[in-house]
Image (cartoon, rainbow, N blue to C red; front, side, top):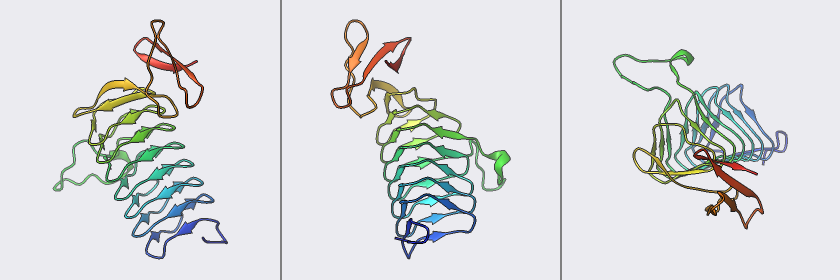
Length: 195
């Protein structure tokens, strides 16, 4: 633990200048945090994680091994990125015609508490809703609503989960309860809201 800054950076990790890192955050082996990045408190960046220039990461975010978070991606608080999942930031990349700079990057927003499964891919320009689940290996090609479970290629909604990660079973009135958190939810107009 770096007692001066109150965060941990492994000796084999690289942190560029002009980076903000919150208290209690841990950055493990072979990871790289690039200039302009902002990382909140109590985050965990696993082995071989790359945080690109100017990326914004909230508090209590967990990024597992072998994930690159590219410029234009924003991760809100409590986001979970599974091992080897993939973000993109350009819709039509060509090596012969490089597109470098903020004006080319298409933003992606991952809202509070969303979980992105191992080896999933998030095509840029979409929003992953609060507490949504993206199944392992899924390819997200459109926005994902709050609390939705999406799987497949392209990812499609196959269920709904609570903030605490429990499958929601709706009664005849469209109401479901989460026994883990004690919270209740309503299914209405093809979306789930907390009540």
